[in-house]
Length: 203
Length: 203
Image (cartoon, rainbow over all chains, first blue to last red; front, top):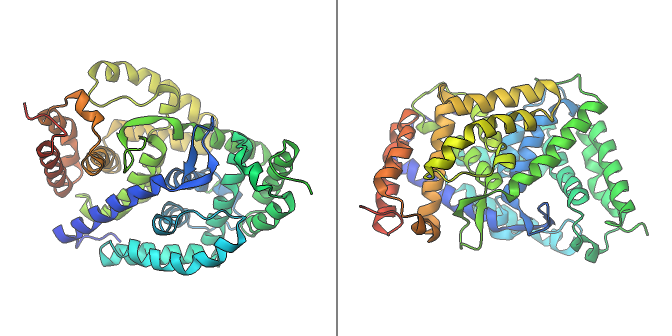
């Protein structure tokens, strides 16, 4: 970066990629938008957590974190869903099956781009999935925190049909603590409050 | 930045802001999502152009541009629409009236945040609006290019009702050339192609 060797062929590839990712706007998640007029989609979810990364960076337990890297990860982290769809976190069976399909999707989607930028974004997606670096841990924490906040805010009744138990939510979200003790405390508050208003089952 | 003086009060402010910006997901634009099942909203539009900034950076005529600054601008550039709504580019009357309301909206929305990060994002919004720096010019170019690409891709028929003339589109989008000669040539191709398929009027 930057890529000042770009030419007309590279522009065509970028355009193909940018048209392709329009499809993420019609990949719908379990969460809702405020007012519950429709489900949230993975593109606007990605936008939201990219802003969270910037706004909440002071709460990362890793002071030297590269926030731009985090933002890039979050912007592209769900592009594989164009091929695979969104998998509900508490659906154990679907989550076992999805890994291989996501790997193939990443290869296809990032492969649309000129080699250098495509390879960079593909590496960032793999880093996000690996959750080993401080940037990936922080990015994954935000990806897990935003749906909790959204759920409490929108009080989306459809979650109730899944009858998710609070303990299971805590278990699935515990990795937030790897990025930020403060955000994990906050996440547990949100889960407790959500249980209180009937969004998760106690037993 | 980073903001390692953040405390519990700051977290509350960040949460209030992050809940507030959920509303951008229900600010709808003239453009459509692929398949035309609904209008595009300003949150997913912002996500799309943030990725464009990263992918197309090699086409910026300014080699030393700060891409993270551009990405931050693009992520937050439409937050004022939470109060003001989206204004159709070719509606001259609405565009005259909106400026003052947007200034007040920016003050309110960024004012929800802790002072330091709120002031930074507010300044970035003002820089975007001013269109004087290389980052702002590039950001504005992408903000103008994406709807053209989206329109040609989705062939949204509702635009037809507005009977927009190609010359007027060219005039409104000409500032893309301030950021990138290549992207402006491409934008003109898209406009010509869109006219050919009947999305804009020739006369």
